Length: 322
Ligand code: ATP
Image (tube, rainbow, N blue to C red):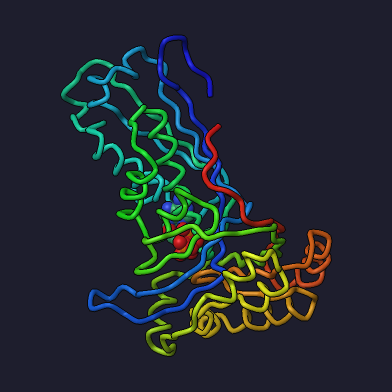
């Protein structure tokens, strides 16, 4: 991170991983329509990156001038991501600005030059894929701007802001492997040993999380299944047991909306994966391979069933500041 002598950072880059739900059980629907769930989330080494940069004006690091801070946003990589204020990265930036009183004053109040923060998203995580891409970008933005603006929020405070932005965002701020309950925003890290090798079957057409939950409400049944077998496999570094324990109640809805996903999951297992599961609300199908080499072989065998296949390991840590 380059610094001018005597000034705060002017550029911060944060790499942030995607996630897989190793376990997801729907317990029921609350009166406000949100679902109560139990899920085990783990970061996967398929990353997006956020670069946050302050323009080169001397005023940019002055606390008074920051009330006039402007925000610019650009995306490199994926076409289907919104580039306006609805992008989760921009929403995260605005939330942090509101919290810290940055950019509060209208720039028209100040006829002279005002400082600008430029935010660039380098998009690699598949979109609307159940891999928390948007949530990861929001988390990376909070971490990057907290540092760039010297805002001084600790991880707990960032996690509280994150919860306002989406159910998966608090997990993406910490990363690692966590069990989440409630609507998914209460998270606790769990003990993990070993590394896990995934074949990631990506579909170009995403699935809307809202549609999948609506379909689940129509055709699915809340379950009482517990994540004990997943947690035990993670503790004992046992990928074969983890493969057998992978579970997602939302699969019934994803398979209803995209019947070909069920066949693709079965093909991954027939090709030698220890297990396979739809991640979150799908449509990504994740196959757990015995090794990196086996992952490549399985990918070659099932590649024709997907628009794209990626290989990645887990767990992948959390947001990394560069
Ligand atoms: P989750 O796993 O948390 O349910 P997802 O991986 O299924 O999320 P995302 O990739 O986060 O889904 O995208 C969901 C929708 O959010 C997209 O269709 C897109 O229009 C919108 N979106 C807003 N910001 C982003 C972003 N930074 N990256 C991806 N999608 C974004």
